[in-house]
Image 1 (cartoon, rainbow, N blue to C red):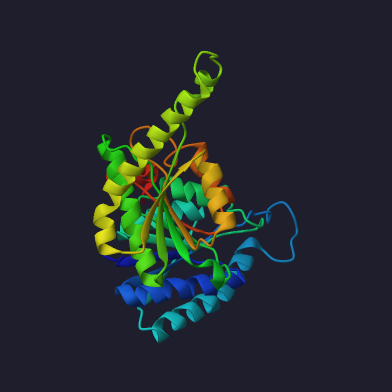
Image 2 (image 1 turned 90 degrees about the horizontal axis):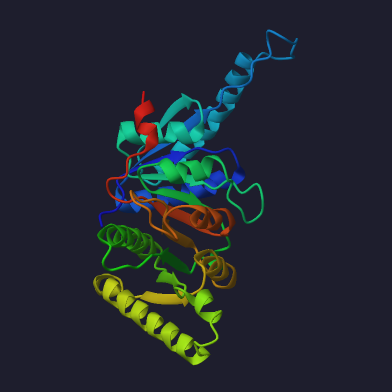
Length: 314
């Protein structure tokens, strides 16, 4: 796939924000992309009419804006030193809503943001999950981690060859994972989890031998490896350190175990589809993984996804 060309960065106010911005700038310089800094001010609760305050909400917002402008100029100066053009957009409202409106208006193909990790190991549940669910373009939540962990990009796919929509989304996930892995020269691992259909029911029936159940499991695993190899063939021709892994177990358990036991720099996964697709793509499984995984995450939507925020675009 072509590299991203228009990147929207949601500006934050933590020390790690400058590190995340530098990571985005480095890629923008390599890809020839333009950058836009989006500064969203959340309106302050106005108690002026009810209480005598040391400073009015209007004055407080103005002073915060002045302080933030200095920080934004520093980020722009950093980008300019690396030959990357950038602009700043100011708006007021809910951050995830304003990001999506900006994407719709400006045609951005990637949103990047420093992950808010106020709780160790967790992404925040509210605004970031809403952004990942509703933003029409890929969302990249960066989380600075020690360089020793930045060794691998993991792409989570849900293989079902006779499902065209699912296959198209799988391809999109891996294409973006390849793009990110190529830049950092990381290994790429494509992971598909599976659970044995009907296993619990079969184990309650005494007349089905354990050996029969295990043979059934081996057959399912072999079939999934065949699906994986067929799916990865075109990607392996482009990017040689591309491994396929088929793991038995619940998706959330497998991904969290991979992230905690082996070096993962980025997880690329899908979050929604137009029709019900289980596993990684919609529902509690994806949200659980996004909340608990301890690495950067990029989430991808299927082609044709329409954000519910579109109808409220100004």
